[in-house]
Image 1 (cartoon, rainbow, N blue to C red):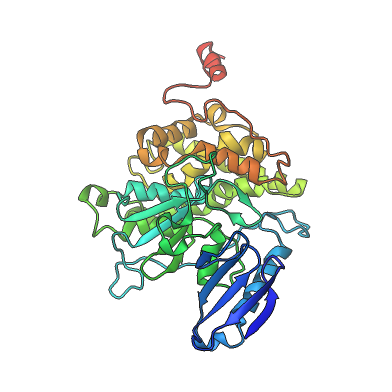
Image 2 (image 1 turned 60 degrees about the vertical axis):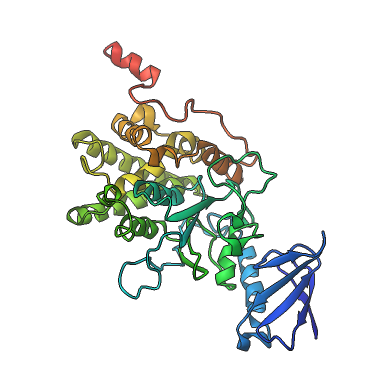
Length: 416
């Protein structure tokens, strides 16, 4: 029996049902499909796909209909519409993460900590995703959790995976989707990972993604919770020297959460609320709040003995703040118009704190890829930068420890 319909690109497809195999069906596309859970290339212009479905779902092909409806709703509002076009407030409103499962040491947990079981999909450009890479390295989990990075460009289909033809996205583990997760071989975009577990998914296709290779499930796409999992739930399996690093110590938890509350809203998300604003009022309101929060941060670091936010104890606060501050001068000053002051010349205490983390801890330096950072923002956000021209400065991207901005050093040296 043949059923005619359209794929997500609006092109006609023929669906051939298999009466003797009610748990599956075969789809033959006249062009490369948008969604390809498992495919074999039949020719340069045709692709055959076999997708498993539960028996009761087979008869009326309901998942395909809902999947098409979900895609149509996503097309109505583009992935790259950071503010809804008809929103009169001009405010950027960050979407809540949709997958919130947890790796846990508790007996009977669905996702227990195991060596080699989990994989992280990240983008070096994304501050939220690099939180998890930093924690992975700080806690000595490189041999426990694999990771791969998408290409820096985010387009109409969301994040895409690099191919052998890409020569502009250097970085560790930047490559095809199937490099570490075989069932994802052939996926061209991160959206395929989301649709493989939920064909009706209508949210954004965000990084990071924590994937369970054993069960074929998406565990979480909430960076703050993945950061916390990596910080605690593998402690029974790792070496003592890594176990001793507690990123969320019990005696500091109240202060950590209080700090997260204002730094997330006003700094981590504040740069986006400033940069993506589509009205002057929204921009001014958010950029002023951002710099008030940076002033507060400067005062704390200046008056408290470091080198970390909580003195000699490295915590989640340092990780979550660092990923925004390291991007501030190279991107946010010019691209997001956060230009009251830059970090290197306007905030000496923050500048020292940031450089200490970058130059003295490989977990921070090795997970910072300025090529991906600068190219992503300036070439993906075409509403802000229509010609996709990437500024070359500042030079260097980060100053060495002990070296200041020449103009500032001159003023200090001459007693002004």
